[in-house]
Amino acid sequence: MKQNTLIDPVGFLQIHISRLFMERRGLSPNEFLALNDQKDILGFLRLGYEPFHVTGDDGILEELDAYVYGNG
Image 1: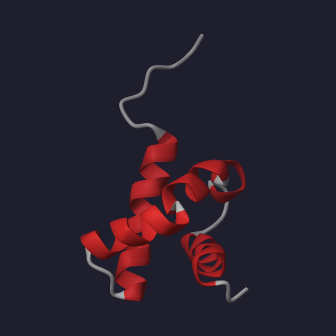
Image 2: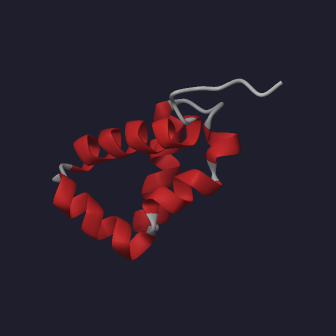
């Protein structure tokens, strides 16, 4: 039986990590949205949900930095 939930776990991960990423990189919401338009950050987090949901925030942020800025 499928459990109904009010919180989409993928959406929660996207919001949580996006907020942390903006803080880490000093980005405003508008700057984040522009970067997302270029790099599809939310899509990256959606596609990586399975491994990411068992990874700590720091590990996900390192992967995201490498994806966005190519430093990994």
